[in-house]
Image (cartoon, rainbow over all chains, first blue to last red; front, side):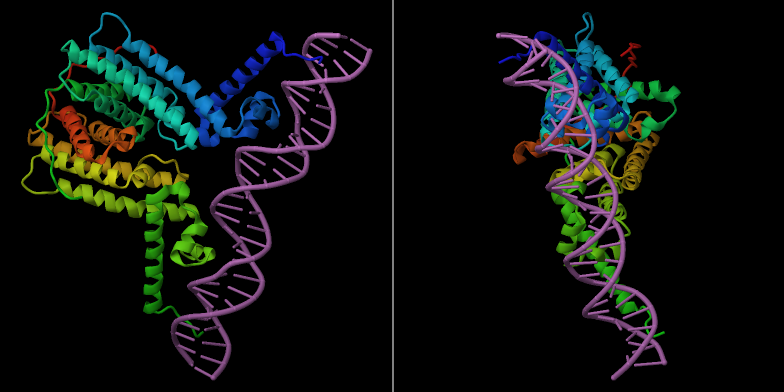
Length: 212
Length: 212
DNA sequence: CCAAGAAGTGAACCATGATTCAGTTCTTAA
DNA sequence: TTAAGAACTGAATCATGGTTCACTTCTTGG
């Protein structure tokens, strides 16, 4: 035997892998998963198509990796807001939602790709984990608030999902096309909407038992 | 000349067109737009593939028509709840959100297709109209509530989008997998969340001016 | 320097699924 | 009954885009 992988090679491969992910993330920002094509990606990376398959066994695997890579970044930013010392739970949540919203507006296509674009089953598992992570982050913050009595008792899991949904829909959809100078107000209003939902005293349950 | 379209033929064509839409809607319910394939649809309709193209110029046109057909049904149901006499605005909205939620849970794939599945540009225009219609319905109801003082002043457009987003995310995502016997409670909780958001007295604006 | 083993290449291949079109069948008015 | 004009058919065609693989180039221990 005459060849054995050395650390120099290992690092170069690691760098290539990272470059692939970075380029894929850029493409994700430009056109979502559906615009992420193997041939185009290879060109971006100055690699041959086949080479991509030495790093990822399939497009699905690549997408999953990109998804997780992007996710880790996003989740990290939001988590950081929730960990600032000296803030109450509502303040934490307001800060986190604002970060979520600002980042989503800055990279709307990627945000949509992470949140809503339908993808292969394997990528969808990654998405479920992503949502789960958000849900966990927010629901933990809500539970903290309940414990320290800065928030009223509530189903924190449901609230956390609803929070993310409200922000996402309010910002990603048609409203996101509006003038940039109004965006901050829109974000503030959406955050306010969310805070009202979680801080208000329980609204008497209305459950019209209609058929539908 | 010996042939001229008669009303009998016109009606038969109309029926065929409707049958295509109905079958397409059923397929949409089973597997979303991505599972809506021309050959399979033709088989369902007992027609040849080519015949579909006599009724719709392309798959995109067909999808758009199906989208609008499905949309009209959904919007109609929600609108009906908002028009019940003798109810206050919060009651109207609770009823409408409940209907929205129940229907979404009964046909989750179609709901996801209408709300989130990425589609051709033309279909996307239809989706924007769809969201716009929802937004209009709810924002009008909110405006009514503000006028009759059953709701506090607020940005009704934003609130309406956030309402739909909160319900959709709370119900379409992971939560929808839960046991059916808990669904009603989940719906009630999500509706309560929404009502708290729109009925609460304004929460002092927090707008952390962080970078993100 | 050499040979073994990897990594890299990209044109060819393949799968999927929309679209077409030449031929067939149906409908109608004369 | 007949012929003009539609409507219908479905196999063939086309487009897209992921995946493969025979071949070339690089890396490394001896």
